Structure formats: C-alpha cells, structure tokens
Picture (spheres, rainbow, N blue to C red):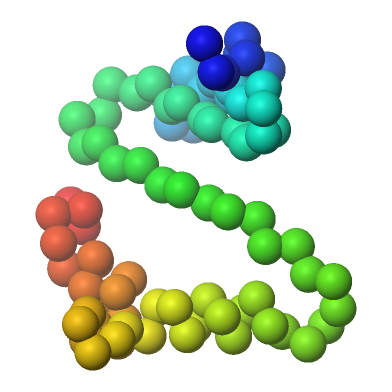
Length: 88
C-alpha cells in the first residue's frame, strides 16, 4: 500500500467531520480525508510551489497556465467552476 498509516486524525467539531491525514511513503505527499454526513461531495488538490527568490515567477506561471489557450479558450476557470454543480 503506497499510503503510510494515518499520520494524524482529528474530529473537527465546527464541521462535524472526522479528518484523517495520510502521507505517501515515497514522495511525502499528503492526503487529507474528511468524513462528513454532508451530502455535498467535493475534492481539492494543492501543490506547493516553494520559491527560491522574490521574482514572482511561480505566481506568473500560475496565471499563464490558468489563462487558457487556443484549444481551451477559458480565461477565468475558477469563475466558470463556480457556475457549475460545485456551487450548491
């Protein structure tokens, strides 16, 4: 099994959810599982982009990647996502 046993487990009273943090043995990537009675389901993926200087290159790349292309001409993907079924 590629995921190590749970690293941390905690009940978050404000959300009525049990949260379990796992860590990948090979890469150190972390996965958080949130168990809730809420019928709305979603997920998220987050990647760290540590910087080596203050030029802002990772931030510029983020905007470049998310500004679309000829094949995918969407300029604001997060605005479009808010219009979809995730916006409940």
